[in-house]
Amino acid sequence: MIDGTFSDIWQAVARAEPDRLAMATPSGHRFTYGRFAREARGLAAHFSACGLRPGDRVGIVLYNRPEFLTTLFACLALGLTPVPMNFRYRSIELAALLMDSKPRALVYAASLRNLVAEATGIARGDIHLVEVTDVWTPRAHATPWAEAIAAGGALPDRAPADGEMWIYTGGTTGQPKAVRWRVVDMFRSKLFSIYDMNGLAQPASLDEAVATALQYDHAQLVNLPLAPFMHGTAMSLAINALAVGGAVLVTSSLRFDADAAVRLALQDRATQIVVAGDAVAMPFADAAERMGVTLPLVRAIVSSGMRFSTATKRRLHRLGDLTIQDIIASSEGGGFAVTVTTGVDDLPGRARLYPDAVVLDENGRPVDDRVGARGMLARSGTIPIGYFRDEEKTAAAFPVIEGVRYVMPGDWVVVEDDRHVEFLGRGSAVINSGGEKVYPDEVEEALLAHPAVRDAVVVGVPDERFGEIVAAAVVLGETDSATGDDLAAWVGGRLAAYKKPRAVVFRTGIARGVTGKIDLARLRAELMDELNERAATSP
Image 1 (spheres, rainbow, N blue to C red):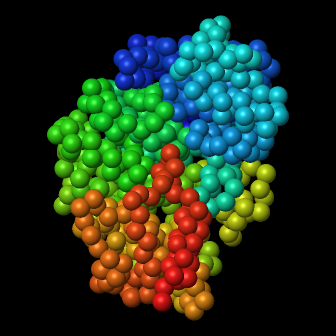
Image 2 (spheres, rainbow, N blue to C red; image 1 turned 180 degrees about the vertical axis):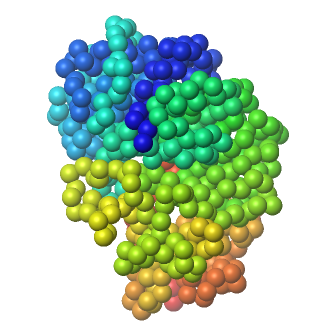
């Protein structure tokens, strides 16, 4: 079993090839691996001088900037626990995370100063503040980033074996929970995605991992994350790229600018683009088509954990000779299965289990070799410690079955041949209508196949007769038209009758968070209000 982790490889690459490109920004700033390591050493020395010790938490409230990855580097090497936090939260929401995780330090962007000031005021913790300058007014009682990294210093030769990284999840279905990963386990769990999915042999030791990174032409993997780093997929793919000596293009913008993203991909020769399903991929495709450009150097577009429709994938495939990797994943377990398409002719594609993933039925028995069986995705081995301070939810998501500890986030699938599966949806979103289970994803996919439908989200709403009925929020194209009956008939022609939406609410848009996720509880409440109003005013 490999005995190192990300920061060990980054240090080794920095020592051997300090001039190799690690990061670049649209404004032309270039960060070599030498600079990357030097700034991480300075920040680590600053944290140590402030009294931080291994195991202490460091909150990160940054959009995609080089300082985000540098903070990760410093924390992982020292054994501090980095805790990325949602920069789009309101102050009360951010304060809740601060009170839960109790960070000793917080690295944040100056443009988010008011948010941080209000949140830290509510949380009332003794938090050392490091402010990254993206506006020019210095804040009192915070250490400027340039000062924090200026002292220099050294990093331990090897990262502590028990170092952790926390990723908050669960914000669409309840209170966010911190998933605790041992960093060494996170690295081991990603060996397939780091190496196999990039056409490389998995290393058996840290020395082999370093040798692979040094031998790999960094220009072969130039990663452009268009989802925020606080989204596990974008952060994972960025640190994976750096683990093989690649480069990361950092957008350095508080808001997603699709036109700028296309220009950056072309300007800095991106070979891998990370999106958050349709929420990012659709405007990116819009921009490329509007600009009349293709993506000749892009070899892969990657997404995970988000709705990624066939229609959007078709548009992306037409932009270049590229592969699309649509991963079924979670913060709790990483990747479980991936749908790979290499062109329009491969669509819609079929999801195939990762080598270490299994399907367990309701009794905990493996059924991934039984075609037609229904069960939940699971993994064992290198998985997280669990949720921070939530033993009940940890026990539910990380069950021990016949002496084996699994992670099971709740994704239901039907087993197909040759380790392929059909994804049905996350268990918490399943609609129980008259005793029949309806999985929103398949209804959404059917709606999106309608030529007039631009976007759609399906939820269950209460019903006296059926317990729940299928309801859909639908966005039509600007010049398109369709009625609720039209769409119900369309879905009924493709799926069982009980899966047809019994209520359709038309909207001009569907709000998604910065990670691409939808607040399903809020959307369900809004649909219920509108349907109740309809019922009250109907004859």
